[in-house]
Length: 150
Length: 150
Image 1 (cartoon, rainbow over the protein chains, first blue to last red):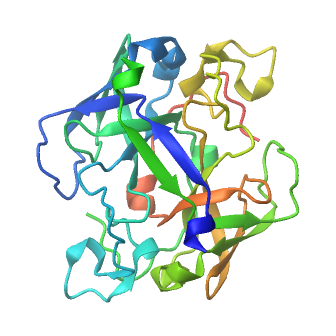
Image 2 (cartoon, each protein chain N blue to C red):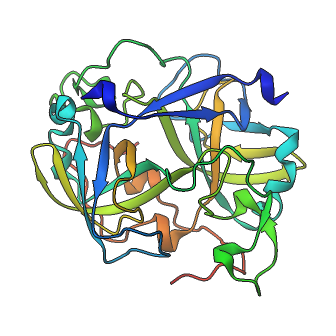
Image 3 (cartoon, rainbow over the protein chains, first blue to last red):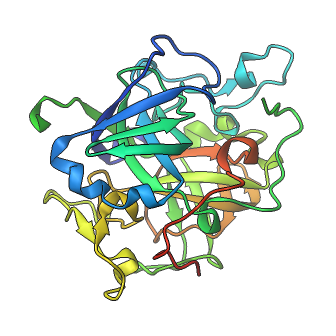
């Protein structure tokens, strides 16, 4: 069946620039620049009226041609149960897409300065969306008991 | 510069099945099945311990080879200001990726029943992540004044 699935091609709309050269867990305090392709500068207009944005990016360092494991220990914690890959945020997934909500500190033309982006230097960015609590947050969400919030 | 950007290929991990045959705005009450490729069933294990999940999907009906407009009226509201595409959730974007947080009603093997998915029947799903308020929600977010929450 996998061979019958359609293919879809992404283009980088920009790249992450920061001091993080190797993957780390977390990144709440990291300040990054998102350098957007200059041809798309105008598409950022008035994004600065939002305090937070959603960044979708391609985890290029884990992108691989071998299938990821279907079960993993969340956050690599061996004492945690082995759970389905889609029940975790493991970067090694069928489509290595990352999604982080970050604070937008500043916009200067085609460059967005953000805080909290969980991505290393050079990461291709594939989409930017305004964060809207009315659409993106849930008041009464329940998480699995083996989740540890940092 | 665009020609130098790397290409990244997505695979559908499953498809949306619901009663929505044409794009509509909103979808809070719609119940959908996400039918995941059977080879990935095991990767869903224990996802049902979360009340909400994040679904990333490919807006296949708006996917096009012509570049999207850089400025749009939010939600098509002509009385709203013309703003940058990335300051909106317009489906017609450089990478036509949708992102919705939905309530997970039930999991039966490779089928997830969800409420609130803003996608039409047949939409390819490219990623599923557990929704974790500690990572995905922001307490003090500010949105632009021209945003109207439904």
